[in-house]
Length: 112
Image (cartoon, rainbow, N blue to C red; front, side, top):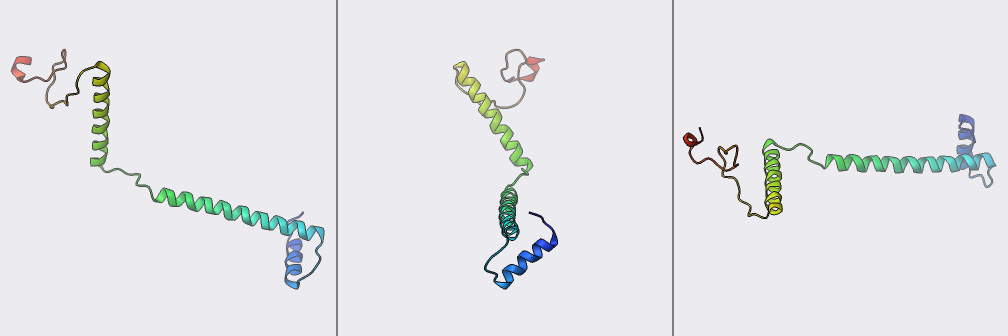
């Protein structure tokens, strides 16, 4: 099977004329063209689906969404640790923490 222009033109002319019998080379080449066009259509459909899926995603988080995700992850980790240690989970109230005990410092002048 050759992909020469003459072979393609002969096969196309035979189809246009309504020829009843085809040479082996014409049949082979027409089968090759049909297979190749189907394969190309499938490939292009896969690419289109990939692009549509990608375009449908929101890949960029706003800063607020990123901070919220980080806080959620820290909260999840703190809850898991409290459960592993067998103690109740207590959210940290914020502020300064004693280096040695890990407890919140109520009055900074005492810590100094």
